[in-house]
Image (cartoon, protein in one colour):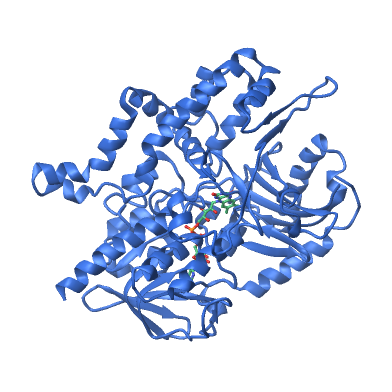
Length: 552
Ligand SMILES: Cc1cc2nc3c(=O)[nH]c(=O)nc-3n(C[C@H](O)[C@H](O)[C@H](O)COP(=O)(O)OP(=O)(O)OC[C@H]3O[C@@H](n4cnc5c(N)ncnc54)[C@H](O)[C@@H]3O)c2cc1C
């Protein structure tokens, strides 16, 4: 990195302006929605559709694309000025384009690439190989580091610096994890087993409801107890079983704590780890990469697919309320100025908390359901820092930091000679000790702590930074609508997955309100840029829609 000095002041002022400009929620925006620039014509928001999707996160856009493709007239209403939710590209520092929230792609379900023809709609991915570099602060010269990539022999040589035994074990560990992932993969692409169906019908019908789980169990075979252990044990125990060297274990353990207010010693971290190795990129399992143009380019590609099928997609359209008929059925949505947009079904890409605690009349929901949504665990440790650089508290004093420089592979993100840096950091609570607010002072103090840590490994880093965007949990909540700042719309702990996401008996995208569905990360299979919730929800809606039409 080449170093040049500039003050941070400019970025702080600019960000304050930006936040003021965005507004928050309904009060800020009326019905002056902007049609997606690249869509066919300049249609206005109509008063009636078959389906309305609240929110244009990538899941909402995926759901809209499938619904419209199947022939449902679909509108997507997004409250922000930009599409994509937590999968966006924003120019926070002039001339520098940031994947402002999510920044790495792997988890997007492979069917979605092909079924929505995302490549044709402009998606280009830039695989990362090597994919991980763990530098060590050591007294020896030069200090060692661990570089891991898809060349297994090369990765084994890297691991062997620390342990020959681990170098031998690593390919076996990869095969073991790969088997677990292959076995549970089909569970991601379908709604969870419908527990209501278990209590009725013939034995065969009941078994059919359990079929996805049985299939996964059969695929695991004799590995089932090992899978059970990975799911339930602390990841430190699993990694101690396989390996002895700390740099390797620390590198692998990171995937088990991403986005979770837990440590590698917390039971149940194994699922979070599996969740982060279950993706693939260009056919390579577990590979991660950047989206050319930033994560927003993925959302744009999905939006383009949806618009090509005929969906209407609007930004700056905040939904205030789900409209319910006297029969309790969802009938559309109500906008800020009281205008109603009617529809036969409503899908919400917003979090379960926003959907059921703010947008749905409480008296129309079962008390027990409301309590469950209120009690969802949304604790989140994540603070994201986006920085542009000239390159060549009660929070963690030595934070966990994942540093990426996407412009190394995608130079168009920054002006010539410059880079964008993404810092995904943990652990920062939503509320600081003693109730101290996350004001500018506290945020800058935390960012300085992070920068000091990086400086120790990469001298000159600090003075190279010309602007930074600090997103603490309250910022993530306010800007992106992520409850508690939780990057997954709710913790991915075992008690909040599959049958119970977001609540027991409501895991199949339907809600207590007929015609109102969840289609975002708060539903199965959870967070990450996967598109699975949007695709699965669309399947359920289409099935119900056909049944509804047939009955009428
Ligand atoms: C800092 C950070 C880093 C991350 N890194 C990664 C990563 O590298 N890779 C990865 O795979 N995942 C990552 N994630 C997780 C991933 O980004 C999210 O889980 C995923 O993008 C959520 O998608 P979604 O479509 O379900 O919901 P969201 O993206 O949250 O979309 C919901 C949308 O609904 C809109 N909305 C809410 N209320 C209303 C309303 N009343 N009216 C209209 N619109 C409304 C919101 O504005 C938003 O656009 C990260 C997340 C964060 C925050």
